[in-house]
Length: 302
Ligand SMILES: [Fe+2]
Image 1 (cartoon, rainbow, N blue to C red):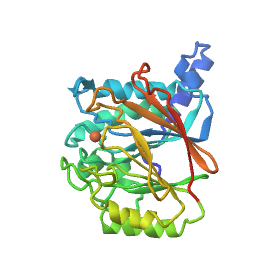
Image 2: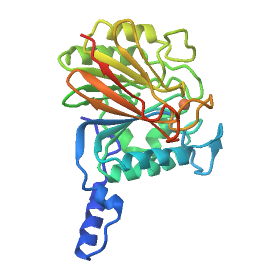
Image 3: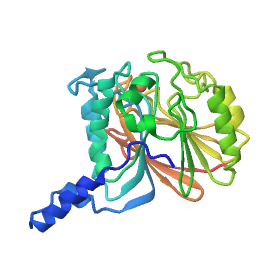
Image 4: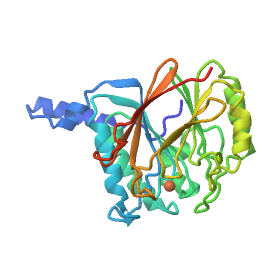
């Protein structure tokens, strides 16, 4: 099981132990470190677009403030998720090494609370600079040498993190035949457990342009393999949930960063897995957004 940005709770543990020994009043966040991890709870982030410069704004949004608001919301919950996924466009625009430094630092509070963070890349990332900046990502075992793809096998589901970055700052994406072959083979040897596909680019369905160029090849693989229940993606900065005619659910995550239409939400998605479903809740950066708290249960196709 690959652990990408691994939890860094040792320092938190030592801090808490020191504070207790010294009779100090513990800050709320230190109490939070004692919260229980919920093995069925997963946090889904996308399109963080973090620039090296934390004061940077784009499209009316300070991306650092937004990611900080999202992490604060997650840290304020009663339960700790089993993991956090970020489906690409981690960096602001063209994937500078310094962007990934700031990005990693902003995720540190989550890792200090014991959350592993799993990453894949989008068209505003740069794979080589991402690996140069995040050496844990570079050295983590991965199935494909030249892609940030991974498989996370958990009790209720197998999570496939696919890497659709074809070229930095070129809008469409591509999985490529090697990654698709790996996906098909991996699904075939894991037919008995629900599979969740995570990828940056939106499938090129419903007339949407600028998405995944090899959508047809992807669906040729996942459509007949009934263990595939959901495809989760970002890229469009446009939150919505749909269902493909095959019964596969399609979740377009909101960006944590900016939206292109002012009424759309920024935020993250809380996902809870059950035997036959995923329950999702939208959590907006703006708590007054009309969609904040929207909840839906997606039942597995059979
Ligand atoms: Fe994006």
